[in-house]
Structures are given as structure tokens and as C-alpha cells.
Length: 224
Length: 303
Image (cartoon, rainbow over all chains, first blue to last red; front, side):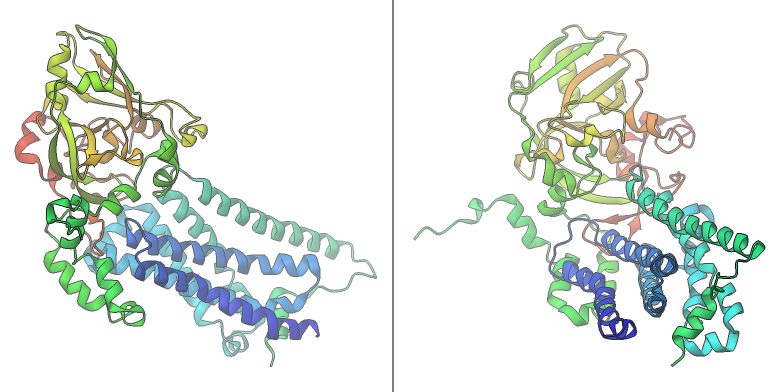
């Protein structure tokens, strides 16, 4: 099997299954009465955790590509990103419906008064245009460069997502800190690489091959 | 064949029967697919219509969903990790401004009293609540017997410090041991209970066995668990959550829908087992009995 075939025949189906797994577990646990205590909290934790993990995974694709040189892996990024969005939608819905009973008044008051709600909402709003423009058509319409610039919103979403988690826990910040550390490494790797690239530009070596930008790489990958 | 008479059934089973409106059962009945979307809509109606009622929270939730950081910060950690705690023998150190300071065996301390059953609402500072049938002894009676001196203005309750038995104490999430305290008039209030049991049974370890405090008009964290020391003091004691975050957890910690936690609202709460939140009541609904304790006090300042 070629590397491309591994992705379409193995990696993608596995990821599809993995994407459904948290939702399946959520339903199973709720319907069989496995959940002790606050079931809505449980829904919010499962969906929030999954959304945040998927965001970290999408941000891990580029560093992984650079480390391994396995450029085709970018083909799975849209799937992971949309999974993050789907769980973020579920997460937000449980809050809107069960916590606030869809009362616009209450929701607005809560967003204004409580920083972690505002930050979480910001993270969600950042993801909306990314999900909308995730199709190949939109990549073409926007053009690689502009598409790429827009999709830098994912950094804001990820930072806001981690902050949201950090802010809402009562005392034990172990998990938020873990997410924060992973995010820090992922962001730091980008800074490190972009500095590297800048240095290479200043002193071009004959052997240095021009590195494709992220947007171009995606264009390449998404072309049917 | 022996046929069990209804009186042979444990109280917990009877309660479960009456809780058939519990969302969990509804979801089970609604079936997998339907419950996901369509199932929630009818339940919305049912639950909102009945949401003001106070029904006993099932035994499984009362004993399976706990905040007891000495056994871990997860809600299910206490139920999993508290089993090994040795609660017999248990000594309670009565100290400070009291005529007869001594280390008592728990049995001796409580011998003169008969436990009573009290069904109380329990409101957690995190925004959820339960209704729990406690078994306990009004603290006022115990205090009278111990004869505090005229200097005793506060009562301080200290939880066991034993990182071997309480693995959560191996982490510095909070300052250990856990300390809580009440003003003397709060401690003597007839609603204040030293709890030894729940649902007609001895208190499970995860609920604070063998001796814990319950002050139903305050947030749950005021109720120290596995108490080894009761100290009468002239000055206001430093309490654990107040030390950890003084702007978030006050000394009084009376349930108050008008004073928000800095990071979340306290105006509503989720009754465990229900999907939708309900309004939080001032003093957790015990205002008629306790509001006079705080007459003239600014409850926004003294939160």
C-alpha cells in the first residue's frame, strides 16, 4: 500500500470510528444509568474534553508532518477539525438547553458576568467560520493564502478553549494544565519552525528546497 | 417460602420505587435512538412541571457522587477510594474553651443521645443539589453537655489527617487537614446536625463516616467530614476553602441566590437526577428558621 492508500483505507476509517466513539459512550452511559450524579455535567465533560482533544490533534498535524515528512497526513486534518466542531456544538447545546433552558436573558447575563462562559463562547464562535469554510470548494474560493490566514483562528479557539477549562474548575487544575502544556508545545513548535524558516530565507543555501506553506500543502492534498 | 413483608425492605429500595420520574429511568424507557432527540422533548415538559418538588435523591447518587477531596477531586473518587478508611475505633478530641476538654471515644461521646432522621436539602457551592435523609444528633445538645466556657464564640471542626488512608491528602490541592467552623449560635441552631448515618444506615465512608457536620442552609463544603477534633474558640477560625480562595468562599457561605460565586452564578441549581435547573432558595429554603441569625448583617460582604 502506498502512503496515500494507508490514509484513505486505514487511517480515515479508523478516525471516523474514533470520532463517533465518545458520542456512543455518552449515549450508552446515560441510557444505562451508568452516570452517577449530575448527568448534564457528564455530558459537558465528555463533549468538552473531546472537542478540546480534537483541537489539539488538528494542531498536531503540521508538527507531525514536519517531523516525519509524511505530508499526506494533512488529509485527515479536516476530519479531526470537524469532529472538534461537532463536539463543541454538542457542548454548547447542553449549556444552552439544560443549564439555561434557552432563556436568552439568562444566557446573555451569564456570558457578560462570567469570564469562563465568555471565553468558551469565543472559542466556539472562532470555530464556526472554520467549519463553514472547511470544504474543498471554500479553499478554492478563498485561495490558499487567505484560507490559511482565516484558519489561524484555530489558535484563538484552542487558547480560549484551554482557558475556558482552566477557569471553570473549582480547584484541581491538573487536566487544564495538561491541555495547556500540550498547546504550549504545539504553538512553540510553530514559532521555532517559522524562525528556522526565516533564517533559511536570510541565508539561502543551494541545497535547501523551498518548503510549501500549510495552505498550499492542503490545496495539494485536497485536490481530487 | 418466606415472603418479605414491605417493612423488611430497606428504606433505600422504597425510595427508589417512588422515584420513577427520575430522568434516568425515563431515558432507559425511552430507548436508545429516540431518547437522543425526540425523547428529551417530552421529558422537558414533565420535568419542568414537577421541578419544584423535593424528592429524596436516590441512595446511589447520595453515596456515589461526592465532593471529598481527601479521597480525590473526582466526584466518583470518594466512593472508589474511601472504602479502606478505618472508622472504628474513632476518637474525637474536644478542645479549647470548654469545661471538660478530653479525647472521647465516639461511642461515649454520642451515647447519651438518640439519633433522629432529618430530610435536608443539600446545596453544593458548585451549583447542584440533593435531598438527603440524614441520621444524626442536633449539635446543640452535644455542645450543652460539653459545657463551653463564656469565651467560646466559635466551634471549629477538624477532619482526620492521614495521607496513608486518605490518598487525596498526598496532593496539595487544599491545606490539610480540612478545617471548617461555625459561629456559636449557628452551631447551636436546632437545624445543625452531627451526622452518623444516611437512609437509615450507618454513614458510608465516602459521605464522611463516622461523624460529619451538616448545616443545611449553608453550602455543602461547610460540613466537615470524618471529624476528629471539635475545638471551641474565642476568635473566628481560619477555614480551609476560605484560605484557598477568600474571594470565592466566605466564612459564612450561606446559600444565597443573590451573591454569585465570582466565576459562576448561584441563582439556580441542578437537582441531581433532573435535567433542568431550578431556582436556588435564600438560605436554601430554611430562611424562616435561620434568617434571624444574620439580622443586620450585610450578606454581600459576609458571604
